[in-house]
Amino acid sequence: MRIDNPAPDRVLESCLTGDMKALNAHLPRRRRALNELLKEERPHVECGDGSTHSFKKKELEYLAQMLDRRRQRNAAPADYHRGVVW
Image (cartoon, rainbow, N blue to C red):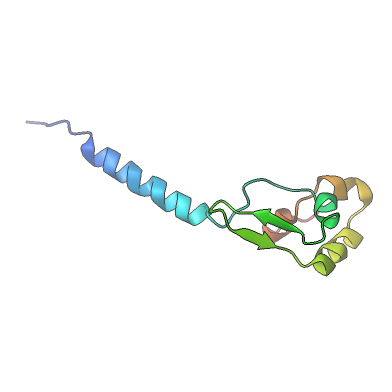
């Protein structure tokens, strides 16, 4: 005799949802363009858990030198972290 019990599926889904939130907590809430960050005195992004990730302005300036102006307007520093090559 088969018993349909959706409760274990809900428990598993709830656990996985919590795990995914924990895994993604350090990721930025939104992407920011490199040229936008360069205009700030203290460049930073807000992370999924509400914390702040700061960038060293000299490092952003170095990245900007490697990009042409058109790509600089659209590129986000997170792309470099993920290994995307422009």
